[in-house]
Length: 317
Ligand code: 13P
Image (tube, rainbow, N blue to C red; front, side, top):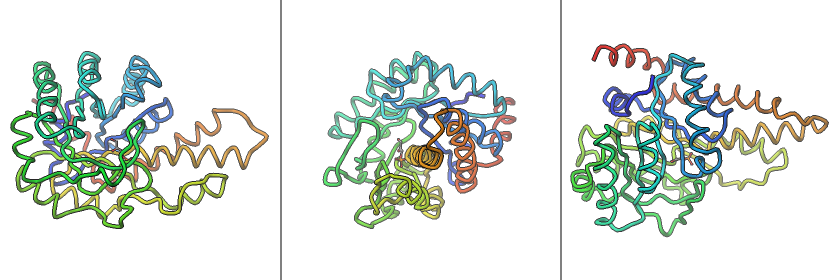
């Protein structure tokens, strides 16, 4: 069942969080929906502009629609991740339930103006809008920001930003970064900043980008099979994610973990079975481990078992 993130966030605020997972391929769509159905967990399926360029928006929509028929119990939203106005306006006409306008690199006034242009159009069609205040470092798709340009969200600006831009959820920069090399200064998640943002926006859904856990066992397995990832790869701990939920984080963005898993499975396959050349073999394995990994994430985020409740409640509205 396709729902607005508003329904998901109204249910989870302060108690649990929804995994928002980036998808690029058929195997990932299968893995995500299969896990969500098994764990009875709501999900947000996220699509970046790079994914849209790679697979084509129509292909991604068709895969997600097919997955919702194959896994009919899944409660999900479809979200545009890190879009411009142009991406947002086209996603709004393509059946997305939610769009992110990322004008976080602009100054405060321009960010408000650009976000407001998207909320004005999206809200006419009941589409939910995520915006971002503050700048995350790291690499995601074609976005790359070095540490010196990263900037925490200023809690004193948060309420004014939300009121004037009319965005429905806010991505905050509180120490996480995109990619496999988080917390390079060893600082971890900045809870005092997050707490002050929540004080400014009580009950309002906040979004944590850069939430991958970056499993050291995956890094080691990749490097043992010919990879060259750096030793300092690290991610957000389960405890940090669980604590962040209490401070209003409702949406937890995950992309890197599933890329690492893909790399591990395929490197192991090519190195350990050099005589084989069939995409179905590592593809199947990837879907299996993807499913297992996401079921474990749903447990950590507390979203397991919540989808059927949301479904029954929504149908009675
Ligand atoms: P990770 O790189 O930590 O997976 O974060 C992904 C993300 O924030 C997508 O918007």
